[in-house]
Length: 306
Image 1 (cartoon, rainbow, N blue to C red):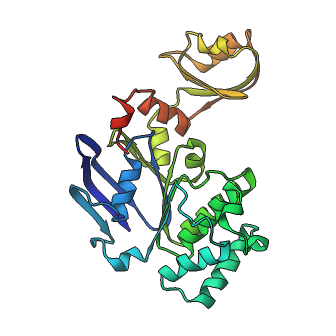
Image 2: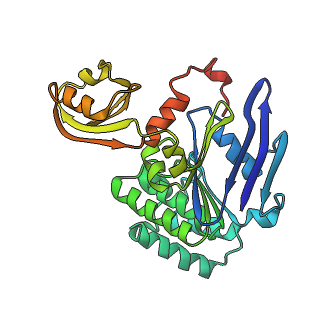
Image 3: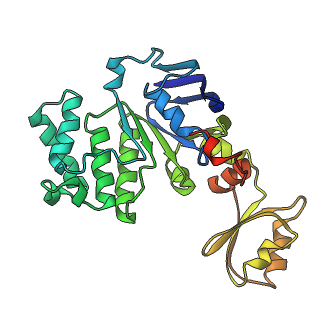
């Protein structure tokens, strides 16, 4: 569906995207990941032909961008882009009309989505009267009302409560199973790990990791253990058996130091903590993200790539 080949974009003295290549195929979800300022948004804007790359190619089924292709793309930006004084249904119908959908068909599709997101009773309210989460739902509806073949979602879960996150997750999987290509840009590694078939991790404008999620995780070995415990987490942070420690609310993900055996570690820390669960596991996508990107400081936030 979409192929980007060695794409580069420079703004003044800042190289925002430096030789990025990626591929999004029908029937799969591609996670476009990276820290703030990595170049994700610039990459998306080039895919959408909002800005032009300085070099490289972006192809859709082997063809360059055209107005016909534009009608097959759907984009949910991270920033709100709705007319706040307009009413909900009118907003959806307006965006539908931009894609050549007549009023009758637009209403049929709009009511279907409003019912799905429990917004039917709000159809006549102004956008500014809606909560942040409900505005996000409306913006999502406007991005897919024309049933695009390629859907680009930039932080789609922003503002959504857990129930509506599940609804959106289900819709994304439905689009995948319908044969659509989905690009999912996010900072939420747990969501990316649950949803993505492939990932493309960008840092400082360059691709630092890409491929099928299962292959990426398996390539980082099996020297990771996950434990659930009660006790002082600082014991884990300072323990010499671990080369990396990620602490969460009720569990920890630990990378074993070289040659350390899991059963030895379990025996040792069981004397220090109340271990409820201990298992060998593949590293989480969050742990891989932190290892590849870390906490590197940028050279001046004003000069960061976008």
